Image: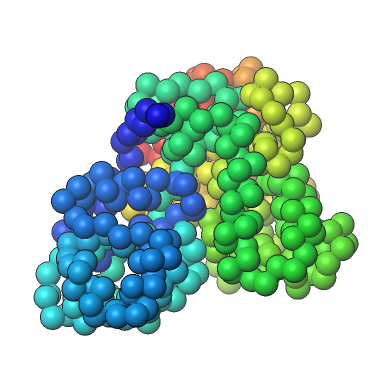
Length: 390
């Protein structure tokens, strides 16, 4: 039997605080991100029911009130997107009891969960996003990954807590996702085309979404590609970043960039079979950028904060990988996979700062070691991403 190791999650304090302030805490995130493990670790005295279990779902559908009487508060209900009606019944119980920390819910499809929460538990539930393990969490657990190991292994807890082989884990993750979730979310008649699509999307990580180009390459319509991207976003498989404009309205109508939540999935989809193969891959820069963007988002989510990142590109070709909106001022961040530091790595940061005098703390994140502040630029190692967010 495999030995399981618990790795402490940075979001734990925020979850416990939320449970003291709301009747319900809903933990959302991709499959296998550690939602169930976190909930059961933080609330060991709570009852537990998995709504993935067909017998439990059937018991609820046959007799909702009897089911809830058999599973009284405090209780953890896992993967509740399978039974959205459950939330309506919980509402009455919560309002009658009028106390906090009654239920912990988990789910892996954010769109459906948010709709259900809005309809049934508005004002009664704190929403928490839990992504896979961050480099900070791994470092705290004594797991120090090289740049290429970080990209290849990703943050799936079972890889690091159970020693599963990343080369095997991610193809299995993809198969399970397609078989279990894709068929439930949309009626995908063209599974072969969908598999081609997600591999092509991996090859375009960190690039602007071009629905027409993807549609042409896959052999389906552009509306179908849009639907598939939305479905991947709803399941936390990918996320998008929009361009930075001072006029907020402009950001929402411009083309976003696409990234994967898990770089381990990206490398698997690209056919990379070991950490040693990452450095020689032509997309190593894009994969590293994906790693850093996801790490920065984890750092904010783990503190219960909204991830407020954008990218910058102007008509003259100047690009900055990330703009962190720090209050009302931009904090530009450039991401380079290079392990060796050279001043050329942050030329675009200097140009941006000369154009935007309100910019603060221009930062280069790269594959090497911390260098402190040089020429007004903060030079940060990929290992210290969470620390730079304060």
